[in-house]
Length: 440
Ligand code: AMP
Ligand code: GLY
Image (cartoon, rainbow, N blue to C red; front, side, top):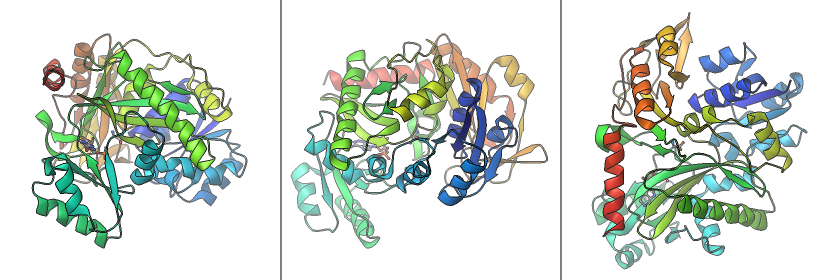
């Protein structure tokens, strides 16, 4: 039996742990905040401690004969967790620090895509002062501007003209704040289209795709309200999207293979781990919005439960550089709905009790994953972030959405969710939007 250690404490790590356990791993979890799901799956083989304290993690691995480590979140990856652990002879599923720059530095990534002439790249220019900013905006046109700080910003740094910035003054003020905070930034071409997530397994050379997913970043129904960590996501039984073709996916995978080769050429380091591509299909083809060097949250919940191929073999294939391209998933649709505390993301109601009717969830066939909640004396309480992900899996989207929605109703508490995620009505809106762009 392999001893597998998961690092991280959210719903993404809960589903990673569940999948490792499903395929027979003896699970351990190292997390800065106790995830009740990981605690149960690991039967108490857990340590609650900072996820960037490498020494403690290495000590835990040695004391518990850990065979390999799977790193969930980006924060430890971009500061070199894999380099530190692997130096001690313990293999990891995750990129080393140089390769993790694909998420850690947007300037690195755009520079790489430009240098290696990657098709899905878009126009961008880097700045570390206000010099030339006004001229660039004038040259590109104000309604074509997106401002992106260089480093990790927890999903809150990107500001798009028309969505978050509404005048030249707004743009200049934001750029000026970034300069004051000693942050470099990109001014990037604004794309119009439909976004999709392509999560892949990468072993240094091979890039193997998983079912496409679409996330919902806005807090409220009809894509209104502030951006969040993601309020829910869906995937289709054919593993595509009605507005994304197999050709689009092949284009994205080909580009990702080129990027992986470019990372090796530039840094000498092979990219190994999960590589998450956020793409937008536009009138000019698919365009890369950003890379993440990890699985998505919620998107991990849409793909890992469908895995038919042994996940432990996939992890070992990534580690050993001999990943099979033959990885199969159930031909099912999934809908994940996140429950968040009332008021999230602006004034979330913390420390409110949640009642989870497990028997009813099981009866309905809905799965559930703990995100930012804590358990005290068998009771679950909210924090200031997303609380639980509820997942429906079925032969088609309509049924998967119904299961997810019924599942949500098995959770009581001061929570809200987006009822529209995964509905046919919202899907049709996406299809119409895509058609209007392609037929312009
Ligand atoms: P990111 O943090 O890079 O995922 O960006 C957050 C969101 O901003 C994305 O999901 C997009 O909806 C939007 N966005 C980022 N870059 C662009 C772009 N170049 N054009 C249009 N929208 C963008
Ligand atoms: N769902 C977006 C992310 O994981 O970054």
